[in-house]
Length: 170
Image (cartoon, rainbow, N blue to C red; front, top):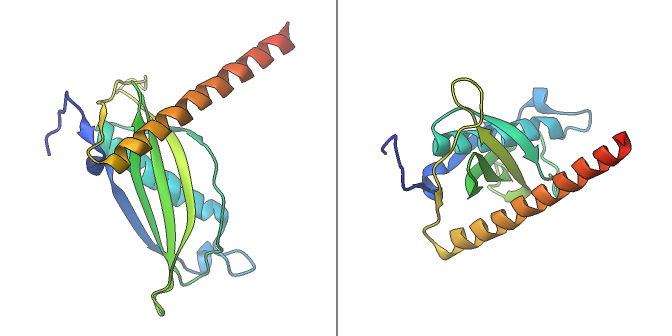
């Protein structure tokens, strides 16, 4: 894999998978894994996918939402899979999916999907341009279009919040 891709990088080049055995120190009093522990792994996987694409350090800008659809119990093997779904000039959106597996029975459950946005930084800590994202399958192209729509909605919400704050100061 080349370090410079002026024409862009594929979704596949950004893919990351983290696997973690969930132990007692990850648990709350009910024996479930703390949501914050899962969020940390989600952020790490998303950031790694963004760094693979940008080939530089990144910072987290936002996490759209995270809904915990299934509890994750101690003893589960957590798989956190991330890949980029949208790229702007300096920002990148990563889709991160979480699956919990019972290693004894082999049963797997999808527990979360989250979308996070990262910004690439240069050596001085300023936003840095990133290569375009190349979608090579119909599924990737659909996710790219959905990511572009999510980014437009984020910008719309930010503009509305900025206008609200300006009105409060006036």
